View 1 (cartoon, helix red, strand yellow):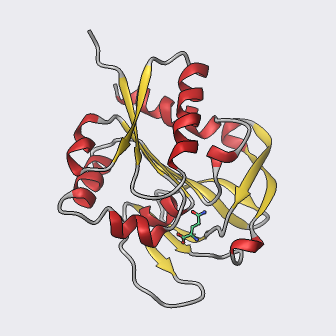
View 2 (cartoon, helix red, strand yellow; view 1 turned 90 degrees about the vertical axis):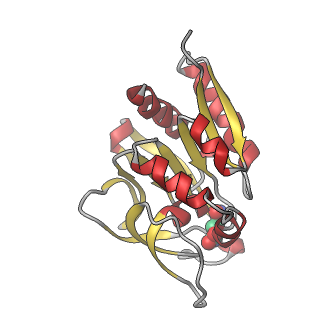
Length: 205
Ligand code: GLN
């Protein structure tokens, strides 16, 4: 019997529960019989078919998952083609270059995604907002994005596709098997990004 698809949520810090609920809805909507697991240890990486890196605080996510082999295992599996969805802090952690705003601190990055990201680009926690924008790839004229102390993407590499912009600012991208958003799709009323991740996972089976 074929093993069930296993979507892992990197579970060291951030909005893990919301992603679990979203993945479960996406499984239902795509009639996929899968499981969702919280990934806390490097050896769990081997058993997942897709990974979500949640929003939260990218410095904490980078630090708390910096145990021997954890970052290496994640990066290796992404390089081998495992689909991954990084949201907000998850996008920052995936980036290969970041600009700190306002202060200049150094933090651990996975560096799998060829983008330059500016942290806290829309202001502080109390400047958080919701805004609508189109996502042509999903055939959507309007998607309501939730931005919580969100980053913005300042520039992209040649293999990176833009999925969404807010006015002129790039806020969602895809690079092969990597999808990343500056906003929180797990807080929207549609699980379209989670369904897309599952679609990418399906293609790898
Ligand atoms: N500003 C946070 C960071 O740099 C990200 C915020 C979020 O994930 N909602 O990690």
